[in-house]
Amino acid sequence: MSFVKGLKCRECGREYPIEPIYVCDFCFGPLEVVYDYAGIKKNLTRAKIQSRPQNLWRYRELLPIDGEPIGSLYSGFTPLVKADKLAKVLGLKELYIKDDTVTHPTLSFKDRVVAVALTKAKEFGFDTVACASTGNLAHSVSAQGAKTGFKRFIFIPASLEQSKIIASLIYEPNLIAVEGNYDEVNRLCSEIANRYRWAFVNINIRPFYAEGSKTHGYEIIEQLGWHAPDNVVIPCASGSLLTKIWKSFKEMKEIGLIQNMKTKVFAAQATGCSPIVTAIKQGVDVIKPVKPNTIAKSLAIGNPADGFYALQVVKESGGYGEDVSDEEIIDAMKLLARTEGIFAETAGGVTLAAAIKLIKGGYITKDSVTVICITGNGLKTQEALIGHTIKPHQIKPNLASFEEILKNINKQ
Image 1 (cartoon, rainbow, N blue to C red):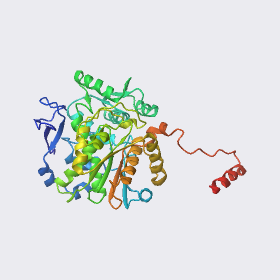
Image 2 (cartoon, helix red, strand yellow):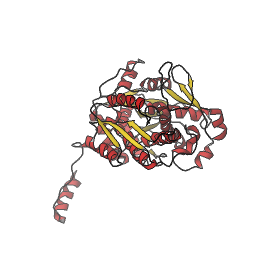
Image 3 (tube, helix red, strand yellow):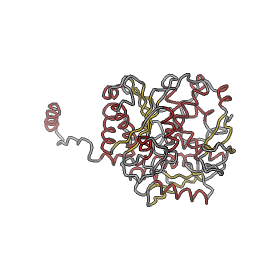
Image 4 (cartoon, helix red, strand yellow):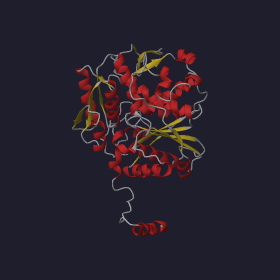
């Protein structure tokens, strides 16, 4: 049973039926899915959610699908790690890592949104799926599209990390490397989407696709014992993930699954591509596009589609934003790995490094409950660490050679 009422323009409020459209034809504002929350409240309980398999479909009443999800690779219910060692280093009383580096089939949170998008594409009768991507979305559409039998066209910046290109090619999609940055790739895809009847997951299917990100937030609430955290730090590319996590928290309160919600939302970006954080710091509502220049390529969107709405969430929640240098990103990746054993991609380094600055700046208080969202696995961005890790100990194949090295190690 679906509780979706329709689509609604986020600007003028004009309503639309459930169709593969994403822009209001009156004011050109983005469209968003609207639900029957009163109906959901009557049907969805904590007990019902907890009785279901541990994947994203345990929250299906709050997702924009009509029937059964298609047989894609299942995603969701990733660990919420109580990060005591990292908390001690940062001087926090209670810190959690929402760890989307594991469990997902292609090791990033994009598997959440793609599972929803492909189910909706099948409901709409599409036989071809496509996307513009900085890497993680390319992997997910390639993999889940292969599993579910879609034809796939994947568009990426030609300068993407080689490891990310290979991670898509293994699934044998039609991979198109465009000579330009992500914003140029996305503009081209908008033109292609207008000409071909394909399900572009982050264009004409975007209102439905984006709803999958809410499951990241639902899980945080459930895994904290049905409580909202005091603070949540979220990486921003388009800004969509931040807005949807906030929406998920508000929905949980709306339908009565949590009683209180006083969460502050914090945006994290790389200094080399920080249009959202720059606007937050300047106290303005206008996002000024930038040309990305950062090792955090999965966040390198210079003209973020949901940037304005991310600003509004930060403002509404009483949060803030921070940007961090490439050096700070690498240091944070290494800190997370050696304290909690979590290998995050560069976007994870951005989030943790930003959190460190927010703590030092007094925006995150040390006695509050804080969640840091880590959205992708470090195996995807190993190139960023070349020359920045410790070196291996090289020995000859005999015990004496090893014990000589061991003496030096013990002296350290």
